[in-house]
Image (cartoon, rainbow, N blue to C red; front, side, top):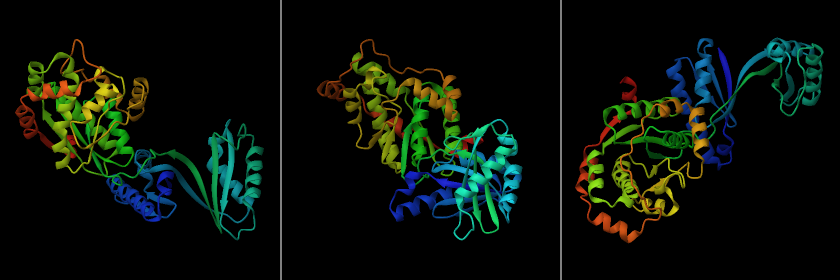
Length: 390
């Protein structure tokens, strides 16, 4: 069996005792569910400062993948346990486990020990460092940023060697911060915004306004399923699709040219509000950033937000597009967005950058709102697991 030590994200540890316990328990439950799907013999043991994961050797790479993509995990290490009686024996184990990795690279030894052992941690570190350096394998000692960190925990008669180190997503355990409804289009922005809320511990449902027909929806469904499967699979969510062609047609016919961009985004929020309430989501999520387009000036964003009484979360609000694309690349959604056709529902020749509330009210007074109500009634709700079957 393989064994992993898993560290909680530090923000979880700064909470009150009861909140910390809940967050840590939730992370343990999430990992148990995900790892049982990998192999039924995977086990998770919770402690106050860490988690321990054990798994069969054959699935250690799959377990590594789960640990690196689960919100709430800060870092993790694969553990090799060895018996020891003296420092020479300890040095032999260290050379066996780290020798190949040390060749031509810098290293640093860090030792933690339980009370009662006849050596101080610093003495063990210096002894092992000297022994490993004598082999001629490593290039140098670097205690600040070693290329190969040699981390050992000593107990009476047993040494725990941290032989591989992985980085987790950080954030909060999924499900500890409630739920939200993310408006997704299949592009870079909405996927990174959705990832941001998942990482922060929010169970994130997906809402798609269909402007481009069946092909567009199929592409967005694949995109949403990837995000959920990779980062949020511990919790089931819904993929909601709203047919919006009739609404767009009414906007093109009834709304003044300069106000179309703001108007359609208000329609998005108006339609999303009853859907979010049905899914018990107190917040909506969008991928908007300040000044990216004319409808996303501060004045216009404020005008858009008044269309709903729910909280509107914009994780990317101050991010540059280049940074967003880099993040999409890092989380694996860029390939989907690169292939996604651009569907422009409404294009204004002279879009306003400062919507006037009175003018906006006049535009809405003349709008046939029954088309929006009909679109919401025709929305389809699909469990995200069924998208995988498709």
